[in-house]
Length: 423
Image 1 (cartoon, helix red, strand yellow):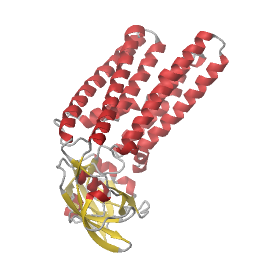
Image 2 (cartoon, one colour):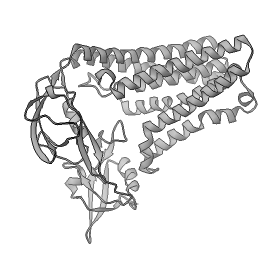
Image 3 (tube, one colour):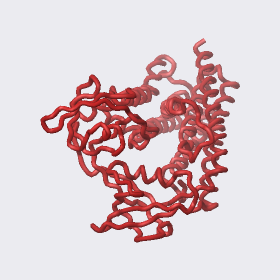
Image 4 (spheres, helix red, strand yellow):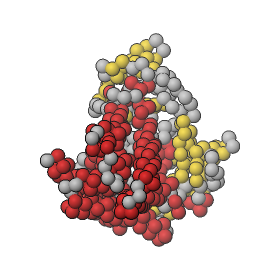
């Protein structure tokens, strides 16, 4: 009975992933016919924090035009209260802001206590929230934005910045907050090649003005990017198909249900890595942020599913037969704790610092569980003398372990390290 319920639950996951993947793929294909006409730049910048504010809730920077600026909050103000929450450290502020469309903030300036009610605003330039979050527009860190890559052919008027030079203004807009994100957003808007933007930067203490121009995409760059993303969708479909095939053929056996779940978690991982910030998308997916969070939740279990899988081969041991719930806890407890910590952080119930371990935390968790699984697999391989069991272990090692992991690493390299100049 339990096995049948789990089997049907897996089919629901498959339906969800399949529908989302089909819609997402359709939008991507439509977008690719349009994006070739857009301009782009290879020059890039990055923002770094240059101070350590500690835990004191004292404002260092305020974003011009954001609710906090409009309400009168300025650098040096000390935040005392947000709604009914007393603020003692910088970590106390996030929860009340995240959970409300409007907030009432009380702050101290000198000896004066000031209060204002202001709306929150959705912003996706926050460093620890990939899909964005609600903000009111002040922070505790001071930032410097420097050039990390410079393509001299893109500069059409004025001096060419060097790597390490400080960017201080884009199109006469000057802000100390995440200028790197604003530069990237501006340069990758759906605009044609040949559009010029004015930049102001400092080089060895001198303030210089220059002009950068968006370029036409090369066929090689465009084709390479498209092929890599189509490969991502293909692998998503392949791992989904493997999950369906296993459930249909051997879904009544626990070991094959575990293998099917493992493939589903890998499918969710590949789908989560699919491009999401498209130029001028043809249509939006309703509640896409919630759906992506659900897919991310499935993705987190990929390491636990791998551990569970190796504990079932070549045959379930004592841990997965006599002490089954203990085995489940060993496989999945860290994954559950990770998801709960991220959820509680985003709702403001955990300190803000936990969110900084978002993606790195997942990668560390995956690597640790992956490594432990390979050690268990190696021990089982050398402890068995049965040829059939050794062949099964080799199949698991290559088909479920090494092969999908290599593909995942390559895709992450292409998506985030920009191998071969792909963006």
